[in-house]
Image (cartoon, rainbow, N blue to C red; front, side, top):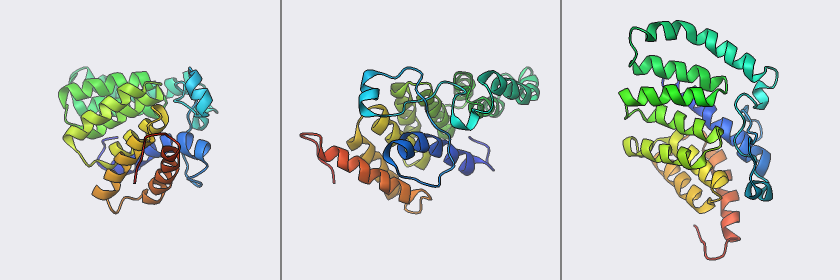
Length: 222
């Protein structure tokens, strides 16, 4: 999220959202995180074989099970209404577009969120936080490749962005089965951000990823 007062909280929620589903449930680490889960809309054979929980159907995370996708969208529509009214007279306002995207993201309406984030980025392409959120939304939609592309593009603007590096590593690890690539991203994250609040969790994930690399012929890591 890009609201100045909420960026650390919302950004961390985004990272934890991926981490609970992909890390806590699959690896058994990260206890105590209050996070959204993931559920696969179309689990591939490779995903089943690896025992990995892929991105969720929109509106299907554990945090939203009490409300149907239709109800979540209805709530987001109601919250977005005044912003959409303002948007009529200021159609290219990146702050308005981002705020609307955030509302739909938080309601797990990821395809709608991506649309508004994309429009915001047309007006402000260098907004790495918005691009990272868009990449994460793509991941939740089941599109790891596009998610990675957006994370990489965000890093061209802010090379050491902790949220981006966290998510990039996690999608490489669980979306592309590339633990070595994930480790490289997380090492960069911790080197550039030594006081990162999720350092312990990242180190645990790196430990698990290194175990995987050890069983991959011809691949090594530190």
